[in-house]
Every structure is written in structure tokens, then in C-alpha cells.
Length: 130
Image (cartoon, rainbow, N blue to C red; front, side, top):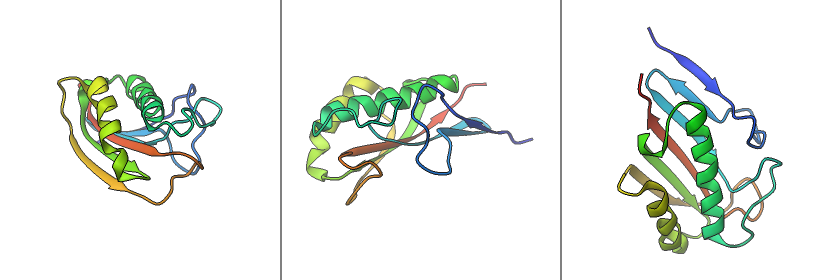
């Protein structure tokens, strides 16, 4: 019997389109792309990719927590950058957030993100424990 559950975190900004913060499918959690916005949908961090990345991971961690997971449960991340040269700066934050945990990862450069001025977006897949 398969299980599907939509997860919406009221402390986060409303989604920009027709989606939810995450979807649980059996023991997997699919976290929608997160950008550096606060609860009101305002961009956090200005043009500082490190500050934006920290906010992005705060948002990801809030979604994980709402589903009963933590950053250690993440098995895959996809990182979208508007400038691939920011990879090293973003990686410093990833090391802070993940510590010794090393998820599978993909990094993609994109021309724009949904909020003007957003520099980084992260989506994740986590393994949920029963």
C-alpha cells in the first residue's frame, strides 16, 4: 500500500504557484525548490550568495522538520545557481549544514529564479524513517 502526503509549512511563505512545500511518497520526502525568502516572501540576503544560501537551508530544514526528518536524512540535493562561479561560496554553507553527511548532488546554472535577485535555489530528497 503506497502512501502520499502533501506537506505545507505555515511558517514559510506561500508557494509561488500550484505546488506544496514537500510531498511524502512512502518513505521518501521530496522537498520543493527553496529560495531565500522569509515568511512574507521577501528576499533575504540581498546580493550575498552566502546569506541567501543560509536562508535557503533554514527553509529546507523547516520543511524536513515538519515531515519528521532532519538534514542527516537528505539523500539527494539539486542546487540551482544563477552564477556557477558562486559554487565555492555555496559549498561553504553546505559543509556547515551537512557536516559529515554527504548527499548525492547536482548543480545547475540557470538564467533566473522566480524571485528577482534570488541567486540560489535548492531542492532535496530525504529518506524518512518509519
